[in-house]
Image (spheres, rainbow, N blue to C red):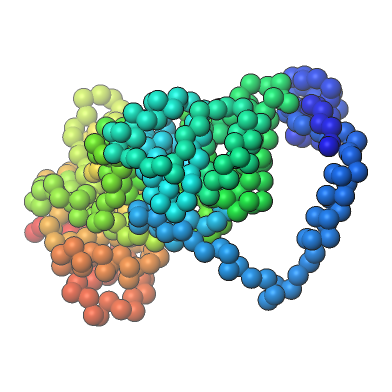
Length: 458
């Protein structure tokens, strides 16, 4: 077999050093040396023969001669999970799931394990909890299966031995930051350990055609801990999001080699685990007060799914020299932009007003299509006049106060009509092909000023 040696490789210039140093002596960059396993080149004849056989097998092929029949997706009972994966679980795929501590990652994958155990043996590897702790969670979730095997292990070599012995059909690792290789001197969770262990699981997934789920820790900024190459190795990167004190969780896809990115599945945390939310728009609007001031309905799009959410705004006279601007669920920079446009272009006085904006349900809206709804809610609160209860709105606000078109307008309008809204404000430049057959009065406006005349109750 090949002999491996631990060296420190500079990520800036590629030079190798025998020991770690804060600064690379070749290029002078700081903190670029990463512990790496390097092949010394001394291999046995068996290993050389294996490589030559592999090279002979992996020959270039015409694209039309390549078949993908064995990539039959496994459908899960959770349709929301299937949606995020792109239509089901692909054999040999490597899926990374990240999220804040306590958000429900382990709970979700334990529920998925129970569903997958009906298709074949599942090996659930836990590096953070004992088998007894997992059993307690399974009892709470009412999960019991003879084909769900639990292994509490951190050592990568031992894990590979168990995989070869049990030959599972599905593999779940909780979490990748707790697994370590004995050949590396660094601690579990370090850059080199995470990269090397992820590469080993990639070999298992691709070599044995086993779907592998990896749970990843996140940093304080909300990104997955470890090297960025971890997200490049895997096929799919999912984030489980949500406010700790809200019951709703969003499973968001940010990378997917087998489906669309930015797809979203919505779940509700209950006593028996995470439950699917079939009609999220209806739930988010259930407690809405129709004639309340400072409230408007935005038609946003999460992946390919349209969502109607309530945007609330409150403007009150400030008690300080500098007025406050607080945003919950919308981007703060977009809020400041809208405040400036309303002040400069529409003449709404907000210089002496504390402004608070909140998206109901703990959702985070990032697309500019919600600009018009935020602006209408702000003006409604300042003027103390409610927005029409039967009206939804969608549109991006420009710096000149104009409304700019957004994509997938027909999909948004169909969702608004399905939930009983009678009117919808859209930018005048929107190209609508199927709006005539909808039970919805589409009102096209060119600017925020025109939208105000139609949105506020006269």
